[in-house]
Amino acid sequence: SSKAAAGKAWAQCGLGVVYDTGTMGLAVDKQKAESLFRKAADQGHSNALSRLGRLESARGNYSEARELREAAASQGHMNALGYLGAMEEDDMKTVRLLTVSSELQTTDRFVQLILAECFAK
Image (tube, rainbow, N blue to C red):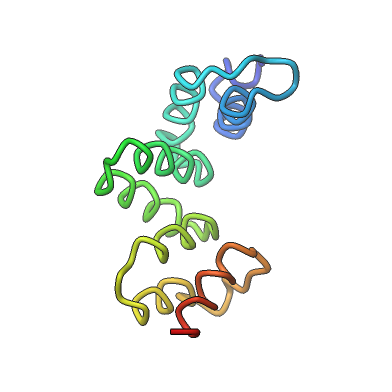
């Protein structure tokens, strides 16, 4: 897309999602997706940071995944907060991560599930 080529982080991340998932008639291309996510993440795009965290976690690079997700979470990215919570072994730390601010009220089902699991133990 011309917006992605022009360096717009939102467009780079969006095109990265298309390559990552193989939607909109494009074949899955994980390398292109990662490259686009990195370009957007370099500009601080929270969704790109979170998606890179997922890729790094899948590779077993958990410390890099944590750093990327923390950067996304610091911008209020709820999915990143959920994954950070899921990475924690201490349930109370998980709860604190997921309730860091009253402004971060969420209907994100993943985050709700992680919180529910903490309280069910």
